Image (cartoon, rainbow, N blue to C red; front, side):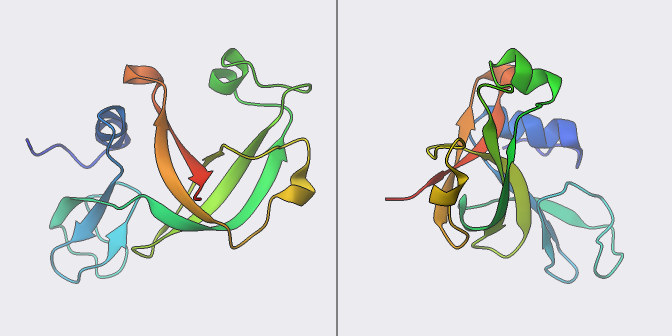
Length: 135
């Protein structure tokens, strides 16, 4: 795999290839899903891309009725809300993304602690991260 810059663009390119990537500091081992050149833990500047499992636990969620433009273009809105999740990945860091495979019109059916797995929705520049309940 060709080494990419540690930017959101590179993160999105990996995602478009179907891979959820994180950045690990070679100096201290700290792992982040946010692409960064300087480690937030030890301030070293020696990152490397690492592929993450995509498995995690739902830590929190909200139902969104007024979406940002890309999700409005995908058909979400007042009558078709979506769930947005905070997920703690198995490797430790957390990330936010859409939660699919649940009924956002019945938020009482969604529970914190649910085991989830990452998936990529869309293709190319339209690719976005989502999590789906396992099992």
